[in-house]
Image 1: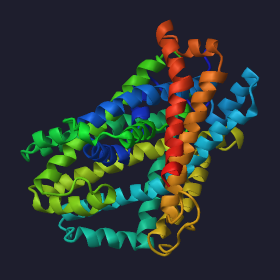
Image 2 (image 1 turned 45 degrees about the horizontal axis):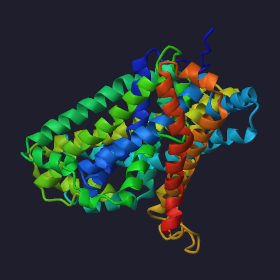
Image 3 (image 1 turned 60 degrees about the horizontal axis):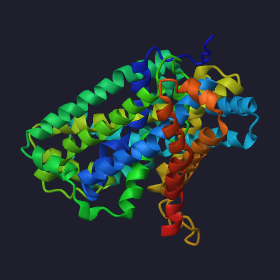
Image 4 (image 1 turned 120 degrees about the horizontal axis):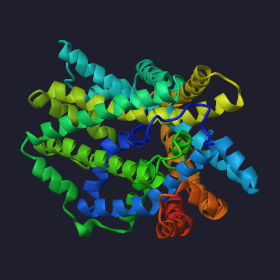
Length: 459
């Protein structure tokens, strides 16, 4: 008899794909990937990135999904059961704890940034309704960051939106949300690409993104591509393990893994085709990156272009949806754990996790204003000199996630019995299964280890 999760199950293969893609697609896809592509050789970087997806991303993604589906519980409890079943060291349970804690830390600052996207969406809605426009984008963004009250309000709104979906459960909450949000995201993105084509610079943008420039390829390019492949698939934080616990037994893990990876990459490339025609049209610096372009430079372009208010609203709505679908997956592992171990109802568990993340997020809010002068002591390697938000982001993204991914690969490749792997990956041929085991046992761990130790070597 097939085991099912007490939290519910995805109703179909497509429901899982939408949810997993929603988890993978985030703010980094909409801006960071196009920026990294343009700055690292265009099409050459894309080819390197796709290779990293195949060598690192997919093996670990499939590992997380199969561990989750076999356990049918939250990551900590699923690993506890599996360790007992295998007679393995209890130390492997730390994988679940690392992922769950990393997810809470990431959500604490991710919600603040998600609040920025909601704030800007509201500004453009107000402008459509006759309100004041963003006449000085730099001052608008600086004013937002310098206001603890406003940042806290939008942080709270974003957290409530996330909590509301998770509290409703797998079928009524997560699945219903992604069935609406992911098609909405693709429609918004396609609309922006079509609009970008009307600028007459779509061809230049495509060349900017896809024309190989091998002179820019270096060892650092390979590390950037591999790091992006790892982080963009939400690996190491056990979200895919949690979503895998709700995946029906008859669904092929390799097939859904490949689909999610391709969809995630497709969104990132489409984002580049939506953004860079505008960047080129208005002579903006495409290598500005991050908030400097999204929240201060692009609004200048929106003010000058035809229907710019509508475009601006669609753009920030797209960012909001991408952030929302990712934040839902970040909250789910800890919520599932509290339901299983603390005996809380689904809504109470989500409320507890949301409250913890919201309170922790206040440190990020204050790092832009009241605590702006607070810095990590300079003598501490790697994190020295960082403000509070940068420190939390670095520890969770650059240390905890690679460590979690490394341990997942080692556990799946060296500890989990081959009979279990064959049962969960039955759709793979013997040759393909052997190739996957080789990747997850040796290649992926070595490459993830390289990402993990590089910041220390470069410091």
